[in-house]
Image 1 (spheres, rainbow, N blue to C red):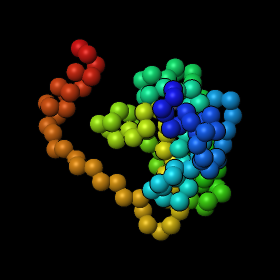
Image 2 (cartoon, helix red, strand yellow):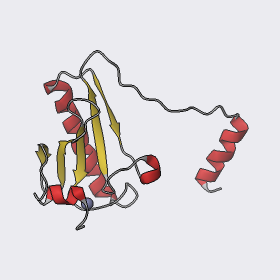
Image 3 (cartoon, rainbow, N blue to C red):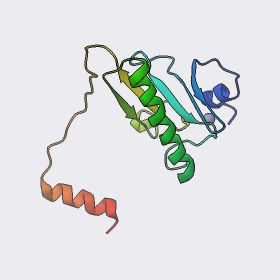
Image 4 (cartoon, rainbow, N blue to C red):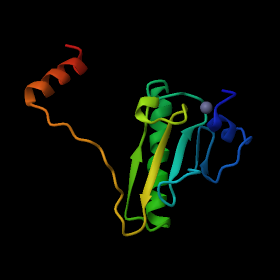
Length: 135
Ligand code: ZN
């Protein structure tokens, strides 16, 4: 896709600090990292979200994500890591090209994650579960 910054990185038209590359997958450091070693793992083929990528390519992408997370743990002496995948702008997907974030925790400061939690009844939860099941 011509205007996609990740496709430009794949094509070598934009710089990136590459961590891993094969025929299907590219991993590089986030230009504005949350933590040192914050890595983005992308499919070389352009798909916008996890709902668009074929299952076999997604399976391979997550396998490589796992492999890189293991290298980050070992080679950066990380104490833990978060893997996240945002889909659509409403969920803060800033680049519309599927990618997984690997955010390592290398220092003593735990990763801060602030989500507002809802307090719901089981009746309400069951209603939502029914909607998701489509039944
Ligand atoms: Zn793209």
